[in-house]
Amino acid sequence: MNYLIPEKMQAIQVQNPGKHSRLHWCSVAVPKPAVGQLLLKVAACGINRADLMQRQGLYPPPPGDSDILGLEAAGTVVAVGDDSLKGYLGQRCFGLVNGGGYAEYVLIPATQAMPVPVQWSMAQAAATAETFLTAYQLLFSIGQATAGQRVLIHAGASGVGTSAIQLAKAKDLQVAVTVGSADKVAACLELGADLAINYREQHFLAVLNQAWPEGINLVLDPVAGDYIAEDMQLLAQDGKIIVYAMMGGRKLPELDLAVLFRKRGQLICSTLRNRDTEYKARLTADFLRDFAMALAAAKIAPVIQQQFAAIDVEAAHTLLSTNQTIGKLVLVFSQHK
Image 1 (cartoon, one colour):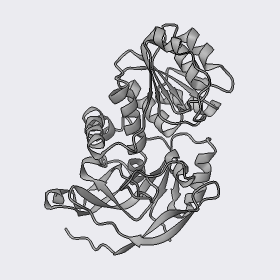
Image 2 (cartoon, rainbow, N blue to C red; image 1 turned 120 degrees about the horizontal axis):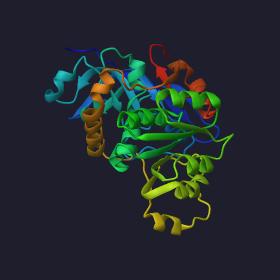
Image 3 (cartoon, rainbow, N blue to C red; image 1 turned 30 degrees about the horizontal axis):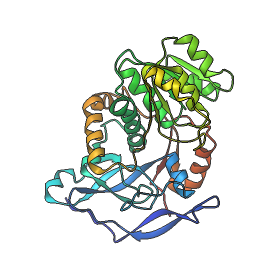
Image 4 (cartoon, helix red, strand yellow; image 1 turned 180 degrees about the horizontal axis):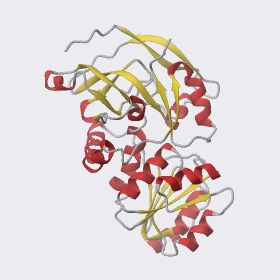
């Protein structure tokens, strides 16, 4: 199976990274797959908060990664880097990419490629890898959560939050979330959360101290800032707090570490983007081992608020920056300049 691949492609790049950045279409060379790599003709790509940070100059790509935005994509394999991968040609795949998702073609390591479930759209596949693999890493690779334990998920209606609720409930965890609106409360409860707290109306520390006096085994926190001190107070013995973003600020208020010592608690910082290919390959394999059947049966699936034609990428970024979204936003490449 041979595909006609152009020398040039259209890609969305950042001009003037920082507060006044803008996105623009440009013509760049189509990347050529090396050994172990696949070339996807992109049908859709997921939009993530990391993309907003990168265009602001706050989250540069690791050395060697593409500087084009986009950490996940779905599409058809049109070229491979070596003969051992020929079986992938023509296959619909999705997964984490090392940058470059906002383009007509993108490279993906074969070990990070997952088959698109038969009944899924490319948009669904494009919305899955970054958030579900991040949630899986936080809950199980790092958090080592087990059935019956209690987990608190801050920003429960976000892409990672909605994915984490589904994975946690599939493994029989008890789930509480914090969110900022009534519609987000409803969405999280519908996904299976046992308790959803609107932090604009209730103090989550007080609610959880009453609801779960035994304490919380695992906290997934993308907020940081002032939240950390309250997370610490909520921990059960040997509990963990995993911080995976800093939406509430990079600086922590004064912390009383004695609280962590009394509980033998752990405060862990985690990111997925700068992990090496071997780590991402193991994470992808572990996730598929545990959840491939659930994906295929649509027992777990991404929550997609809206799809945007790729030409409307600025509107998509503007919407994501409002923090009003539930689940994921997706760019679809059926239209482009």
